[in-house]
Image (cartoon, rainbow, N blue to C red; front, side):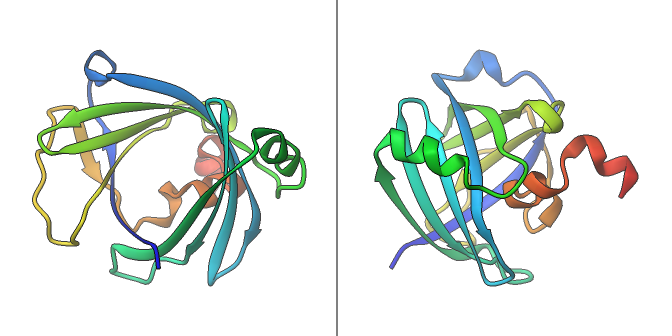
Length: 158
């Protein structure tokens, strides 16, 4: 069984100069329920389908299963997704023993920058780069599934 333990942060400074790799991601949601999400993603030249459980209040761990699929299939599945395809560039940045994934969003989410770090344990220590801002782990507004329905540019209206 797959698990994901992830913490999310806003960005407060220059991170791009420290990135060792970047790639474009387009993703959408085939299903969004209170129990799970089913995501389809084109990441660079590859396609993926992912099933995630909902994140329980105050928890960092959730179930996650991700499988590579033909990129042509992923592109076709994006046409079946709910409104609000997420378009972003992901930057990979090594900090200590961890790799931070920083997402720079486009379209209706332009202006939003979010860093994520995956952990092996919920209480695991990790190095915090100087560009790491406020933690937003557990704040549903910063999850891609929420952003697909309530884009960043519409938040002043919420």
